[in-house]
Length: 344
Image (cartoon, rainbow, N blue to C red; front, side, top):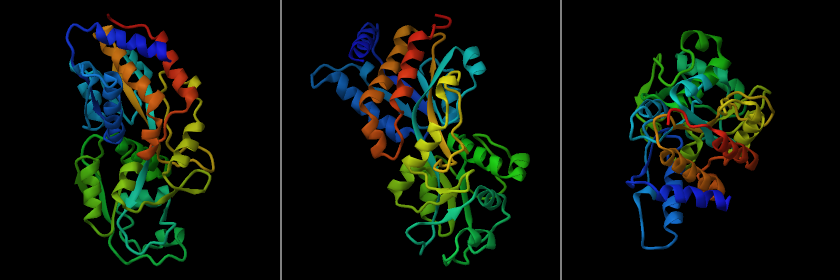
């Protein structure tokens, strides 16, 4: 590991002109990428006075879709996306892809008087809420999932992302697997023509909208919801268990994936089998442009995430994410080593 990092730093040092590692995309991953960026700069400076822009990271949380679209721009080094890119698209565009962290999409609510165990919701019920078929928190379908809880006779205010979002894709992928009506009418995508509700640009605006609206429901990355102090639901999975979007539920979903059998780590963590699996889980992927880039450009992205994998697991856990298991990190490093640059 140390030798690989030393080699990567040597490559960085050969650059003709220093400039930041530039990334854009997932708002879900923005907090941990920001943390890793600071740690990377500090580790490379190693307490010394010398500093180069090659040791800095400039990341814009513009949403998964916008990040992938920006990757065609010559100044961007990587996009972070909650939606994995098909291997055929990666090959056509001369790109690499690998997971960097995992997390859960929480179904967040603004309701008073909930017991400590919180609310229980199912995929069909959430789909009917977002379709406008269930309009009140006192609806019999919600009551049936929450016996003994005094639910208010309060209108449900639906909130959703306006921008192209990987969180939206994961959420609507789950709804599509839970509701044939949702799958037929709307499907899964980063941008959806929502039947109803309030738009919010980005995760922070979505959380603010929920916090300001009694009776609101929305979906957002678990760690950010946790830090905002908003209640979230336990969601029923394929096995019939109600699971919260905490690291244990996400890890159970991730463990059901045979990563070594995938191509370019293309896999979904949504609605996986297993009693403990949280059904709205996701991995965040880095998509790195190789074709048309110098080896210095893409190797320094590897250097950033190599250090994050080696030393940043604690930061990921503290922010509510699930770090990659050691075996998966080893597969990623082997993937980097055997990748043949395209078009260089």
